[in-house]
Each structure stands twice: as structure tokens, then as C-alpha cells.
Image 1 (cartoon, protein in one colour):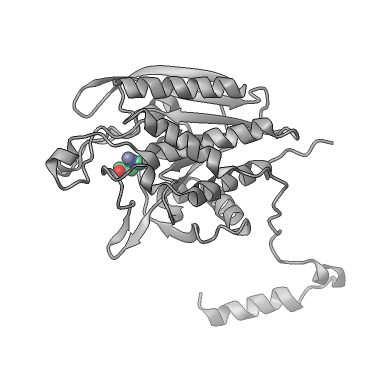
Image 2: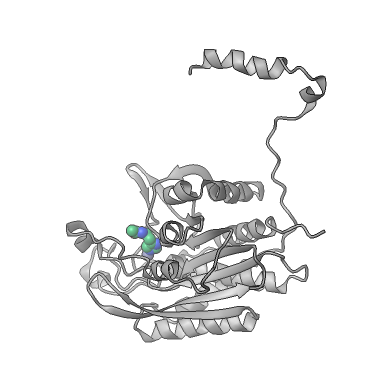
Length: 337
Ligand code: AHN
Ligand code: ZN
């Protein structure tokens, strides 16, 4: 249909309304109203990121991973939410066995309307985006790739718990393990094996922490800590959960964060949300930094390099993402008569 044939139809709807009262009914979409929401504290989120990084690289089967996992469990318990540790064994691309655990904190587990928030807490065992073999061989600190999402979610939960108005939707926070153990780039280019990333979310999606678990929708945070990060509408999220994408991006824009949440689509990626969508059937979006370049989108320069340390973390980015997540939650309040 071209633009000329559209005009008579529009004219019909605009002018041929037989009932005069109906002419006054507004056709504009309902305005998004930002509900009252507590203020997100980026200094506290920054501290949670720094604390994780202080353990060193959190590679499964290593002491820093164990210690950081224990810290996360203890923090969630301190906050007073229900905590479930989901321990499992995962097999990597090379056949190695990982002793892994997903860590789940539930705010008001008795409520039936629930929102799922997630981030991965492990870090990559090698820095395959480095040029020098010596640097490639070392695990990364994952300040943005891992710790940033977890730090923001800990602070989101702390803020909800401290709020005297008591949010009346349930919130589950899942820290997925073994996300970042995918094949090194050079091996993947020769012989790509499917489903070698996101081992924790694959396990959880097939073995949810509660048998009949359902959530209204989900938000995944990944690489949400770097200075001037931009978050585009990522393709897998748009495919599985278009209305959640629109809700989150419209909320961010309305809150004044349109410089970070860009109203443009980016290419589809495999991340934890892909499995939560396809296996667990929960519509989940990924807030992830993607940088537009001449030949498509890339992750940040620091991605899977030794540069992913505290120097890349910026409080403004933590603030924008944390405040947006909080705002989305408080906008889902159930009206109680
Ligand atoms: C891939 O590189 C296939 N997916 C990106 C998922 C990821 C890795 N997120 C953080 N690190
Ligand atoms: Zn990674």
C-alpha cells in the first residue's frame, strides 16, 4: 500500500465518525507515568563491584570463585531475602567438569506476580581478545563483564528491602554461574560448538529453583559498568520479548537516560537471556553494552581483555542502569483496593 491509498482511509476514520461524542475520544497512546521510586545509590553499587573484583578472577574451580560465591550468598542473607544455592556440574567445550552454582535471592517469595533479574557472576578463564599470547592465557577480572551487573542487582535489592513502602511485586535475582566459559575465539572459528556459553542459565532454565516457577518478565544485565556505555535494543531480546524491550527503553528515556538507552536495534547475541527465553519461556531482555562500528556492532574495547578492570567502571553508568531497573519494578506495582 502506498501513501496515496492510505489517505482516504485515514480521512474516513478522522471525519466519518457518525457519533459526535466519539470524535472527542483521544487517539494518543497512553502516556507512560513514572511511579514514585527510591533513589539508586551508585557509590554503594560501585563498592559491590569493587568487592567482587578484589577476590581476583572468578573462574569456576578456583578459590577466588569459591570466596566470591560465599560473599554473594552471605550478602543476600544479610539483606534478609530467601536464598537458594543451586549447585550443579557443568561440562565445558573441552570436556572439563566445573563445580558451579547459581545463586538466587528472592524478595517476598510469597507473592505470585514476580519479576526476574539476572547477571552472571563468573569471569572468563582467558583473555582471547588480547593480541599477546601471554596476556591471552590469563583469566580476566571482569569488572564490567560480570561484576557490574551483579553489583547493580545487589544494590537494587538492598534499596527495595530498605524502602518502607514495601514494593508489592515479588523479585527474584539470579546470579548465573559459568556464563563465560565459551570456546576461545581461535578454536571457535575452526570448529564452533553450540551451547558452550551460558552453562548456568542453561542449567537453571531446565531445572528451575522452584518446580512451578513463573515470572511476568525478566531483565538480564551484562557489561553495564563502563563509562559512556550505550545500550541498544539487542536482537534476541527484540525477537522474544519486544514489549519488555519497549517498556524498559521507554522507562529509561522518560527518566532522562536516553543518551545511554538508545532507541535503535542492534544484532542478536547469545547470552543468558537466550536460554531463559527459549527453554524457560520467560520473556527476558538483555541490557548489554554494544558499540556501533563500520561493520556492525562490537562489545567494548575492554571486552575479554586484561583491561576489564576497575578503571573501566563509571558510577554514572551504574546509576543509569540501576535507577532504570528500580523504576521498571516500581512501575509494576499491583493496585491494592
Ligand atoms: C558471545 O560472545 C557468543 N556472547 C556474548 C555473551 C557474553 C560473553 N557476555 C559476556 N561475555
Ligand atoms: Zn564475557
